[in-house]
Image 1 (cartoon, rainbow, N blue to C red):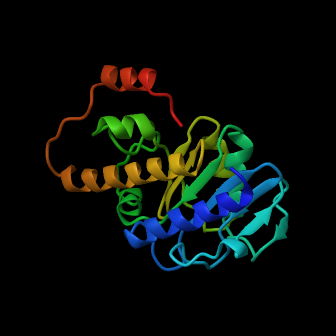
Image 2: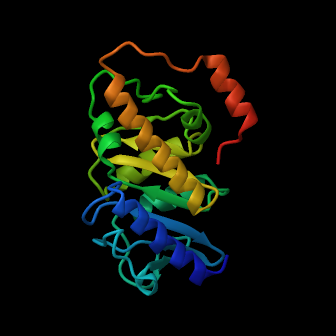
Length: 211
C-alpha cells in the first residue's frame, strides 16, 4: 500500500473509532510503518478530524521529517516498532472501559483481563499492565519496550491500551476487541462467571496466530 493510501486509512479508521466513542477530544494516536519511515497522528489532534496531508512523518531515529509536530507519545510507538519488526501499525487509545480496568485494585499485572471470549484470546491474548508514567515520559516508552518483545498488546495503568498489528486494520480490530472485553469484564466482575479453559485458549492460539 502506498503512502497516500496509508494516510487515507489512518484518517478513515481514526474517524470511525472517534465516531463510535472509542476515543474523545484530542486523545489517542495512530501510527503506520512505511518503507522510508513511519506516519503518526500529530500532537493535540482529534482522531475524528485528521487531515491526511498534515500527518507527521518520522524517520527510524524518531526525527520529525514532515507534517505537523508528532504526538508526544512518538517514542512509545517507536519502541513498539523497534522491538516488533513484523508490526505494521500501532494504535493507542484512552478508551473508557479499558482505562477503567487499568485503575482497578487487585489486578494480575501479568495478565489483566481473563479470556472471556474466543476472539479476545485470538486477537489480544495475554495482556500485561504497564506501570504508570506520565504521558510522553521517556520512562513510559522504555517500559513499553520491555513488554513489547513478548506482547503485541498491553494496558498502560491510568492511561489506556497500546496495540500493534501486522497492519492498521489488524491493530484496530485487536484494540476494539480489547475495549469490548474490558466492558464485558466490568459488567461481570462482581458476579461469578466462566472464562475459557487454559486448554481452550491454547487451542485458539495454535489455530490463529497473533497479529
